[in-house]
Length: 104
Image (tube, rainbow, N blue to C red; front, side, top):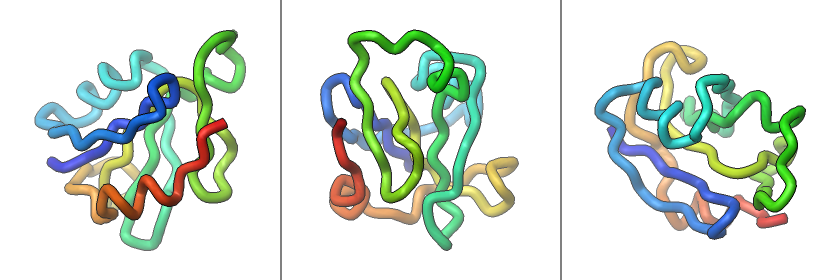
């Protein structure tokens, strides 16, 4: 399924293919402790390391998507029809997503 990897360290957003669902998200984010937030009415969600708010992030980049709290390191945007339980292609287009991100 179509998804996007946001890397705050390199300030990039790149399309990725998720064949393995949540395990792929965990691998891309780099941690098993993954949480998500809905980012728009289409059901797209931002998956991120839920420990990033407590873990030492010295030297790691951060970003903010819309009005969500800043996230450190890496995150994945992918579609969902039921609060993240079932994943599907992200509805947002790459250029639109890039315009919604502020690098901190």
